[in-house]
Picture 1 (cartoon, each protein chain N blue to C red):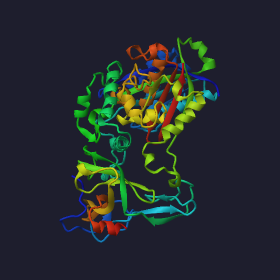
Picture 2: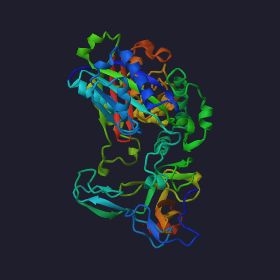
Picture 3: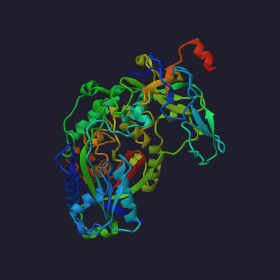
Picture 4: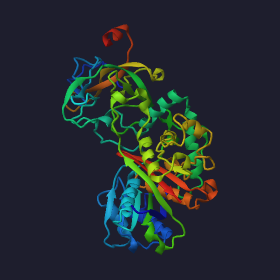
Length: 378
Length: 156
């Protein structure tokens, strides 16, 4: 496989834009990414589009805004992980020589209110079980009992992410919150309060990738290389091999991170900056453990001690993450790639980690249907 | 408010909200044995039933009854109304570890949510969820704290 680089990335601000069409939002993100990469749209050979809630053919409706060049437009759906799935497919096509230059797009416009993850008349809905924050809360309750973590430690994830969001002009929420405000917001599923839930969001993100051997003609000022990847869905653990209660935390992230690290030839100790799927505050804590950035049971304390802050030793969700940047489900993964690109190219401004010397970036993006892990190197 | 395992009203015909997940008991509040599947090829047990084994993909599975009693592995109290749900907050979702290794997620019957704790012993009992258009009482399996000595004996 050939080396593949990210040449540019762009966003449409995340937030609520009821007056704005998907086409207009997607067009802006794609234009920003193309300009950032210095790649004209006519050179794009294929577009992979992560989207969930929009209707049939939404990918083409958006991408063709930039021109009708006859390229294939591939719609990809893996719920909240859709646009890292789109990124992976585009990457593999370029790495394997099918295309030289590809566009990855993610976009979404969402209703207000709790995301409906099951059909209206399904068993899970009628029984009140298909409650997304409850699945995180169930893990969080067990985690607190097993590791002595406190509700304040989960709340601190949101305090940190809002602080980072306040430094990000593309974030949905750009105001800081105190831990008292987070804890005092109404409980959704204990211990998770409202300010520990990602919002519903409108937004778009785009990334331009290219075969490294073909990238020279674009005189890109800078780039980052796709160094490793892993993807998969839940793997059945036979009960005879189960350690019983220890299985409360998800094992998929750990399994996939090992594959991604091996492909990238690195270990978790080499990672300089990370983006994780914090749809709800416990997500950051569980995932930094799953990725091996901290030991099992150490995640909550690591957050509490500030290790995941921008100036910490394992900065996480420097752009505000899902909690503050926002979570337009189809666009989230491409926005994660965008932030890692800014960090590894030293263009993250007030959010910049490690004095601009970050060399390795890591992404974990989960959706109903699986988990994507991506590793990038400057 | 959480659902009740018994009803003061004379119920209509009892019908499972999710047909085939358990045998319909004579009345509300009685323990239910969930109906799962056991793989004849590798011995793994599942609830809900599967046609193909998740472990070995065999399609040779037989129906088996689950134990009625288990332990709370974890729980959360939900305070937000899910649109379309019959459950009115606050109610507790519990994940129950059954002695055969199967984990079941369901809702606690009405009771003291504050005293709910990991490790609590609970029984799966038939509870009313809602009425359907034909006047039937739709029921499902709910978790109820094992309370009395009688419960202990029955569970043994």
